[in-house]
Length: 247
Image (cartoon, rainbow, N blue to C red; front, side, top):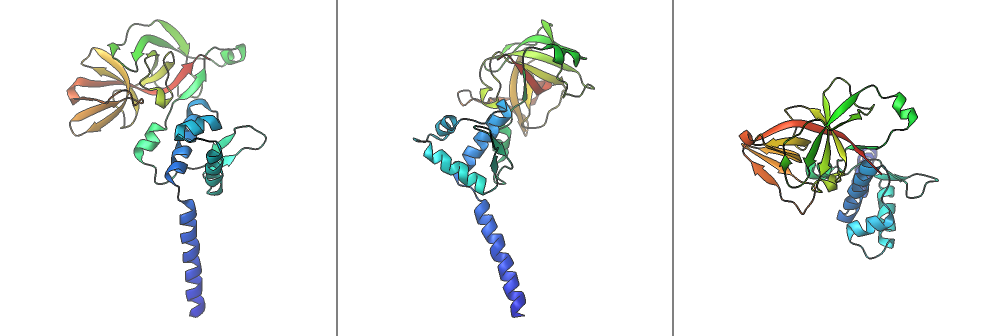
């Protein structure tokens, strides 16, 4: 009986110790989400200087300590023989829906096609002018050019491209001058980045959220406020799936 009690206590102690070690401080969590966001948007780990600025720290020594703590707790892994190379293994269970949505960014395809890539192109899509990631512009225009559909996208959908104008989605990894690739649909889940047509007149690239009888179109830039509309004023034209960027 005593042996069973000791065994139960030992297992309980191990569980509690594991839970405590897995908990993150606010700075550790913010750094982890920043690293994850940077990796998703560019495929490259942020520099220590970028990490320092994102957390508003005065020295890089604090970043070293945070990185070590995240590694010890199993949230990240340093990749050997590569400078600045980090891999996010998991995100904290306490991350909110906003944390996950706001760390999302579409896959980026480098602009320009070499001969090897051209061999793999079997489908092109139209670019229909500009889309506002900021102040609304006129609704989607006529075809102005064509671009190849990335090989990693399903070919059973209908797609179109739009040139981004403005910086209101920059924190989602979408910059002015990028060409976003959109899959046509008239529905979208909450938190998705969509092409939204307002009053059948103006088109915007925003993150959509529905609550009751209202629709919120959110920017990914703190300098822009969320726009609220009635359900009859907003039509979803498509969902963002990828983008091209010229480097």
